[in-house]
Image 1: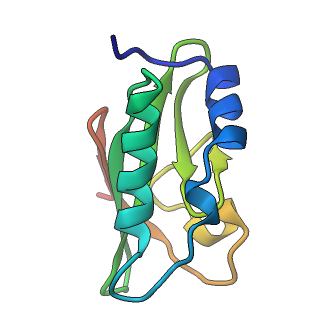
Image 2 (image 1 turned 90 degrees about the vertical axis):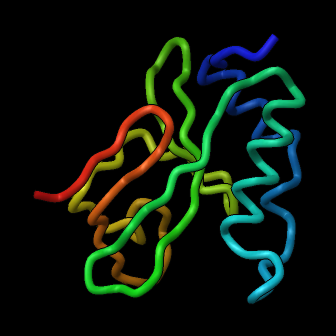
Image 3 (image 1 turned 90 degrees about the horizontal axis):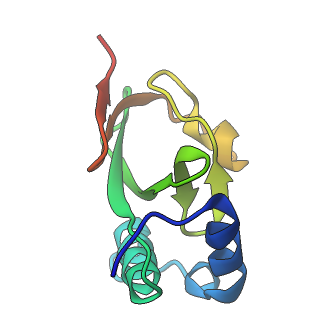
Length: 120
């Protein structure tokens, strides 16, 4: 049976899983592969998660991460390349600041199985 994990169960999974240890390779193992691997491994442990697509302002790229509706904390996001848990993610946020990356990607749209948020 697949169910929504607690935040503690998510943190335990993140310590045990090795998706974040994979090497990023342009055109062969990028954000979508990290996200798909996370979702697959998470489901094999009995937990539900879904792919989230971020669209950025003034950028011709998107980015895939994971959304999880924890049973005790609510909706959180995970950057599967680092297993950084993001407790709050809104349209207009600078994604790079959320995950401690050196870039400036302002979120225009968040799309996942739980909700869709768009900058108006």
